[in-house]
Length: 146
Image (cartoon, rainbow, N blue to C red; front, side):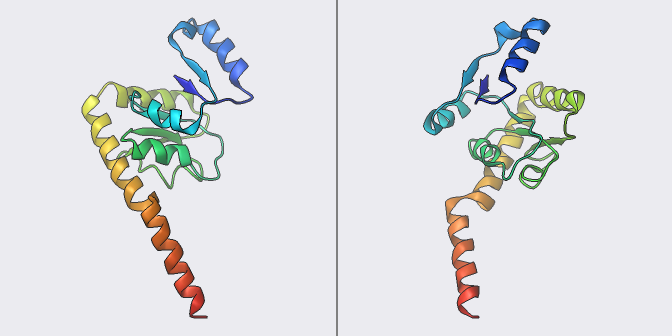
């Protein structure tokens, strides 16, 4: 299942056809945020092979939904995913390592569950609205002292 739009969609669809796997891929395109949240519940793994990210919000969302996450070693993801604990972080544009990490999680449901649980705990501890509110209030408190 591929959710979202981007300039590489046509290239990816052609590659999938050339490899003979297109019939196994559900190309959903852009979806409203509430629908994306519902889709997390039917996923076994969340993969984010980005070349760059400002902040990996969708990775945090997937972790909060209890999914193991495989992402690339870039700013915005490598700070979010605990490599080997809540998912895997692989080198950018390394298809083999990406596939290896995906297979590792998908072939071991126990690993997927434990990574998903660790990711949920991490997302709640570091990226929840409560944590964000505490951080903002602490920052304002520091500013008011100056």
